[in-house]
Amino acid sequence: MYAGSTTWRNWRRCYHDWTTYVPAQKGVEKPIFIDGTSQYGNMLYLPDRDQGLRTLVLDGSGHEFVETPLLDPESSTLDFRSDARIAGDSLVIEAHEKWSGWFASWFRSRLNVEGKRNEELTKEMNYRFPGARLSNSAFDGIDNLGSVAGVTFRLDITGRVRSEGGTLRVNPLWPSNLVRRMAHKPDRHYDLFMVYRTNMTLVSKLVIPEAYKIITLPRSLKIDNDLVCFRQECVVGPATPDLATVTCTRKLTVKKRIIPIERYHEFRKICRSIDEAEAQDIVLRPL
Image (cartoon, rainbow, N blue to C red; front, side):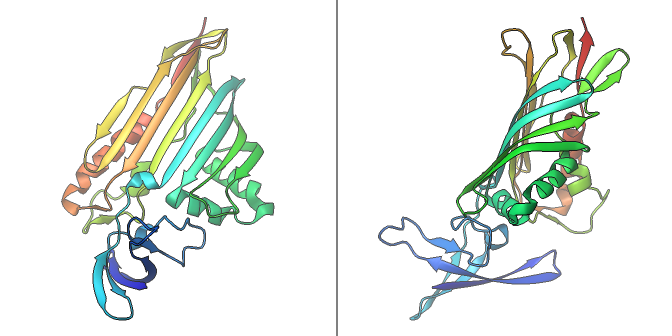
């Protein structure tokens, strides 16, 4: 069976998508739409451009109209977990990153040439942490179309730790830059359409050098409405046997596919608040 759909994007471009429709049957609990043109995506992940559309299903003897599923943003997740330490003016990160949904498709596409994977991953990490040096990378799930892919790696980021007024300042996570990416225009004349909706969870545990104490932590921020869910918090501990630690956690989910023009200024204000919260440093002072 095939399902054809037509939908407008930004009122200017029209896409015609053909997906395979598998009705509910023995062994298939509920109907499934499969986009066979999604070269790097998992079979059970329906690309965003195919979600929430009214489709015409042809079965050879008749037809019916069926709406494709609208997946939760959590179906496309980037999950970053790291241990970080300070070495002079450098930040050293040992990390594992896991991708699903849109992120898995995007990273598989970018990393599909085995001999260039380190080069491409280095570009991505330098976008997040300018000047980062990548090493010890180990990829998982890139060469298959499973639901999850990921990578384990080390980063050495020179200049990430700054001396200022007798203190050390460091931020172990990278910024989302939401105003620049999503809301750079002061005003809009039409709705803001999200090409994809995703969820990002970032966690980093920073070991505090023995000769320093914590002066300031980034302020916590929690936003949860029908547009955005954002949470940031940095907490002290648990400590290692000899050293204190700070664990910083951020979670960002953009919930809506379309930000109506009448709510754009509200959305832009939220983006600015998140950018300001993410720009804060952990501040340390010598004992």
